[in-house]
Amino acid sequence: MPTPRKLRPLRRGVFIAAALLAASVAPAVTAASAASTAPARTALGHHSPVRPAIHLPGAPDFGPNVYVFTPSMPQSQIQATVDSIASQQVSNQFGTQRYALLFEPGTYGSAADPLFFQVGYYTSVAGLGASPGDVVINGAVDSFNQCDASGSCTALVNFWRSLSNLTINFPTPQPGGPCSQSAEFWGTSQASPVRRVAVNGFFSLMDYCTSPSFSSGGFIADSQFSGSTVLNGSQQQFVVRNSNLDGWTNAVWNQVFSGDVGAPAQNFGSGGQYTTLAASPVTQEEPFLQQDSAGNYSVFVPAVQHNSVGTTWGSGPTPGSAIPIQRFFIASPSTPVGLIDAALLLGKNLILTPGVYSLSHPIVVTRPDTVVLGLGFPTLVPAHGNLAMLVASVPGVKLSGMMFDAGPVNSPALLQVGLPGRGWSNPGDPTLLQDVFFRIGGATPGQADDSLVVNSSQVILDDIWAWRADHGNGVGWTSNVGNTGVLVNGDDVTAYGLFVEHYEKANVIWNGRDGTDIFFQNELPYDPPSQAAWMENPSTDGYPAFLVTSHAANFSGYGMGSYSFFNQGVPIFASNAFEADNPPGLALHDMLTIFLNANGGSGGINNVVNGVGGSSTAANPDTPVNVVSYP
Image 1: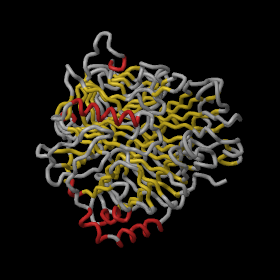
Image 2: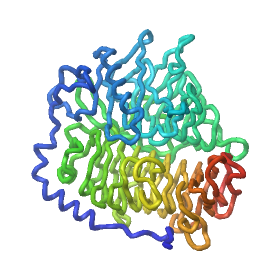
Image 3: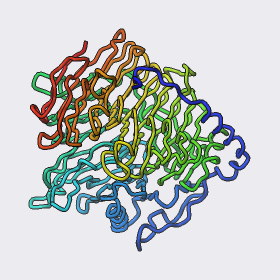
Image 4: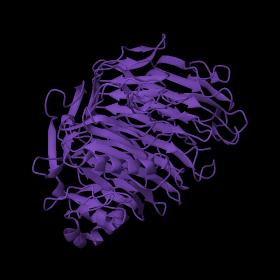
């Protein structure tokens, strides 16, 4: 069988074809690319309009699923609108509706009449201020457990939602009040980032009001928590980067902190499960939409930081620069992909509004420093076995807030960043992928060899979830086929919060030199039908969660976990969770494996890394098997 250690060939023809397509429709972009004045629009159902009654000339039209709230709106109107959206999205795991809820600068709710609302699937909540303090919500923005017909309630599938760029003042709970108003709850699992948020009051990462309250991973960056310790609770793994903490309670299996003020001390493998780095080596916070006092919109791009600690905004304005909204092409799912490519070719940046985009050709990004910003989890689906997006080998491209779904015809990859070869890169201007999520199966049947391929150098991966679905539509060993979630060929790639799950071969392959991964979470595929069907080679059972090849000199990894649960009724084993071809300068820190659920499944993982570390099987269920350092 083919070995994943080989550098895999990558395709050039798709890039050329898409570029020619973009050029062929270039004249059409001039009139279409200007943002138009937004018409009055009604909220879902019978509610009244939620946009301001008076809109300034040239204000952007983000389409029907982006709601803009103002402090002057009646709170009852805001409450009715957000509750209507939540009622549709709370249990809409594989639906097609997507929403962005944007709050103009000002204060919402009060101590006497707080604003409480819930965030469901495919819903992003964000402030439009220059600083998190410009938008204040007195109340809570929550994600609660979901309960099934038996009454069992968990957050294990609370995916695809986000909270950013605002302040939450959580009110003092009232004696005898409902449990649901006893904390700011963010009970979620993967693909649910919290960025650039200030929380004053009790913040809980689990919904303890219903049982069993399980939750399974998350990401926080550039945020501040004051007035209370953060309750980690049942979160099996979590990563917090460049934030300020008043405290952090407990750890389950893998808690990673990088560049945080007030983080727990390093304690892994000797009674604790904390991995703590004093500073983050290279970061750049996510671009965000903002509105000034005159009502003008722009996208702010924070500056690159090195060896950073704490938030970018705690001691003054975030360093960086703003791009006027007029320099963006605003696309919707009905926009022809050729028109999108033409706009990019002519120098526009891109905003993708909420919805599902069926792409007959890839979106092609060729200009350095292009910003592609998603609102409300826009989802890109290749229609004919093509890439969904291709980024040229240029520096400084920023991609954030979007999803990639595999299509019905197998694609070589869903997102490719850079062409084969070294290309053009700049350490002072890295390419950035933030809150970018991949899915093979689940929503619809789909296949792709690889989900994310990174050929460019000087790249930051900041909250990536690549998921070959274990439930939903089109799920099966020969149905939602996906070999590898993340393939890194470029040098100087730094990852924070890499979640990669259930792929059928090596889930991550790292070939690039001088790479760093800070936090890795993985579940091996649940569904190999037999050991013979899942063999790296005739003498090696299974495939690794993470493969560091001989090309990857000076690779460093911190806080890396892989779990197994095989559910086909036959014993399946992986020889190693982590494999390294021992390149020079390799340094792996704080690795673990876990066998999930002793009452179901069989088999397990025989070693943590390269034959080192004990096994995790039914003999030691739900118990971390740790390796503190390798070699």
